[in-house]
Length: 110
Length: 117
Image (cartoon, rainbow over all chains, first blue to last red; front, top):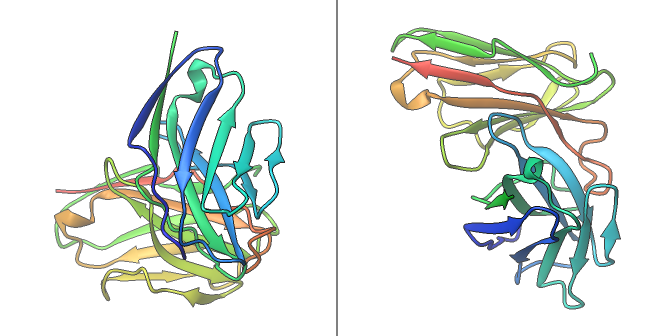
């Protein structure tokens, strides 16, 4: 599976949009981009995934660049409860496991 | 239950002892995964089951670690001759369809925290 690169940490003001970047320059055509988050002392939680089109659900939006070498997770109105570690993961169609990196620590501040 | 259940939530043991950690997946989920997470790091893959068989055990660190899923539902992670370096959070996840990235969203439990003294 392709490797991803994320910033170590980010801060965001409560009520603002949080934009979390991820680089996956070696991604191949059959690989999906997945995002999970992990709130302190809990198991990881699925957020969203996509192949090449932008995706939106009740939690977030995922913007994937046209060349698919990077993506951005957007939390449109961050709240204090969104403070967590956010993991960007590349997973191929037949890949059964998620390979986690270190993720981005997002701190939402009032 | 509604989610993935793991027991015990906390386990303290002594070096050299044997430990079992249990995972009860979401009903109907055919795929089950074990991960290990040390403080400040992302979860590390250990093993994946599709039904009763281990489809990928490439993440098991050594032969002291073993996992079973005899009836394709509950799974037990077994650690023999525990070492202090085994101290970590052990996470279990299940998914409805394994092997298909589009539909294989993993649901994680709250984990079992193992401390080896």
